[in-house]
Image 1 (cartoon, one colour):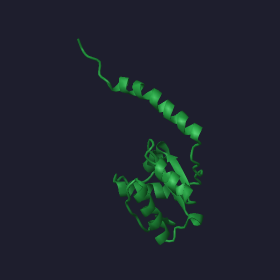
Image 2 (cartoon, rainbow, N blue to C red):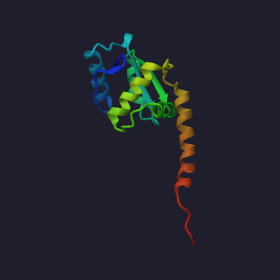
Image 3 (cartoon, rainbow, N blue to C red):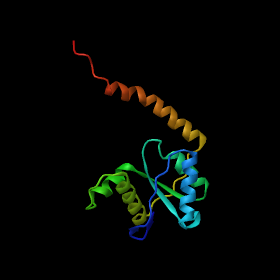
Image 4 (cartoon, rainbow, N blue to C red):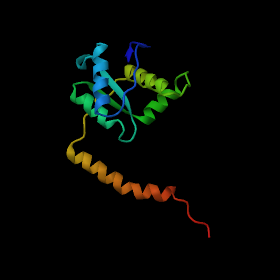
Length: 135
């Protein structure tokens, strides 16, 4: 959690319904009410979708940022520490500095299309990873 340039608080929660509730409570205990808080997170596969959807439903402005943008921003920073806490602080700084687009949950048809696309791509990825037998 950032206030201006300084990280003022941090926490770790599980990515499940209980963890999402804990996160909302934690944010509100620190005065980060939905009407005055933007939550920024890195897009990592589907990992962020459940918490992004939960926070969006709670009224928070959520920004899900492409990992390449975060990586580019990280390369421009003098700190090279690679820990979960350092990554979280970096994403928070990035969210503070940039005017990020608010995330909207995908519609049911968009979600289904994403599922079908991933299912279609999975065998191709597996084929690429599978070494050919040398005979």
